Length: 226
Image (cartoon, rainbow, N blue to C red):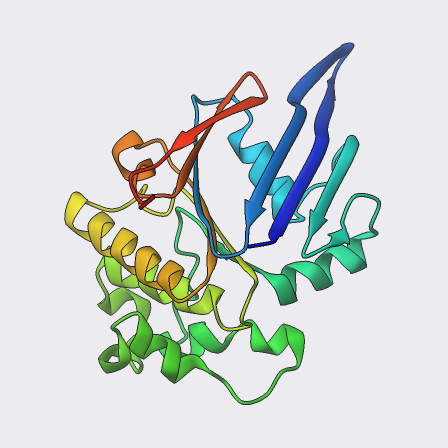
C-alpha cells in the first residue's frame, strides 16, 4: 500500500508574547492508504496541532506534508479550502448539526459548498444505520445517532481521509462502541481513518497507535493488526 499521508520534519511554532512555543517538533509520519491510525497523548501534547495540520486547518512553520502525493505546505487558503472540501472528512466531539435541518439535509449540506449534484446522502444514512431517521430533526435523535449523522455528512464528498477528533468524547460507552464499530466497517471498505482520543482502550482498535509527547511522536501496533 502506498502512503496517502507523509510528513517530513513537520513542525509548528507559535509566538506567545516574547516566548516561542514549539507545538510540534520535527514529526515524521507515514500513513498508508486504508490504515486506521489513532493518536493519543496528554492535553497540550500537540495532538490538536497535528490534526489541524493534517486537516489543512492550519499551516506548518517548517517541514513537508504530502497528501495523496500533493505537497500541502505553502498552499494559499483558497487551495487549502479546496483540499478540505474534496479530500478530507471531519468528525468532531461536538456533532455540529444544524437544528432546523432534517437528518437528510444535514448530510447533504457540504454539497452546497462543492457544487456537486446527485446526493449520496440516502445511501450513507443506510451505511450508518439511520435511513429510518432521515426526516427527523437532530433534537429527536440520541447523541450516538447524531454522531453517526455527522459521520455520514463527513463522507458525502467521498474523502480520501477521515479525521476524527475525540469522536466519542460526548458519548456513553454503548454509543462509543457503536461509533468505533462503524469506523471499523468503514475502514474495512478501504477508508483511511485517523482518530484522536484520550481513551487508550479505544485507541487500541486501530492498526497503529501514535503517541504524542511534547510535540514529538512514538508509535506502537494496535490490536487491529492481524
